[in-house]
Figure 1 (spheres, rainbow, N blue to C red):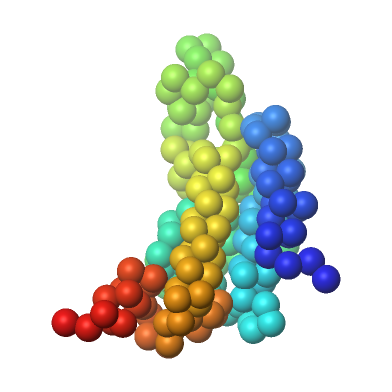
Figure 2 (cartoon, rainbow, N blue to C red):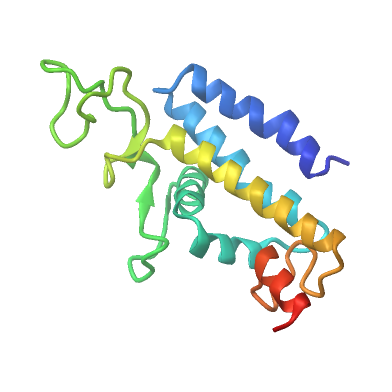
Length: 179
């Protein structure tokens, strides 16, 4: 069975590297978002990942973006207009705008000064999905390392998916040391 580090090294990092090599490819963007989003399943195993997902949505805008993109491609459209963290997104709204050069760029879609182009959302054209997915993956890795550190130090809030106290590693250290 593949664990978190194996999944990250075997699936996530190479998929993001594919996207980096072709930063205007919507297909690679989708794949990178899907595999990065599913890091939470490996993070939480053997527990369910829903608690981690909800916490990470609030903690990381990048994580929320990749979750929306992953679900938009899987389900064609995703989101809820009443939920500011999960606004509606259709798969066709994930686009690859041209570079930001005069004569080539598209108003309100291309990013001025962007020499390559990239993948973005029609509703948020300044979003660079490659940077977003890389930051989301790093965020998940940091959270897992923090949880592992707390777990090794014997914190009562330790363990993946155990967010009953809502304490971070730093907060857990303060709780352990007392006033």
